[in-house]
Length: 101
Image (spheres, helix red, strand yellow):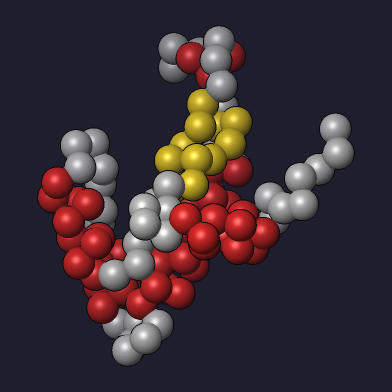
């Protein structure tokens, strides 16, 4: 424990996977990105026309896990070529509407 989270804000990156191919590509080609085989299997098992929704569900689960981690100040939704889904994902994650501070 270096106490980094006490010195700066940490944002966790979340990329919703919209296809099995995307998940495989990201896991193999993006340095530092880990796409576990169980996620790929989960996407494969989602059924025709339901893979993208399963990817969103997994992203929502990740957001919930990050919310519970000490030191994580927020998330950066990286919906690659799927930007129009960001408001929906943020709303389903309970991040919209923004709280009044």
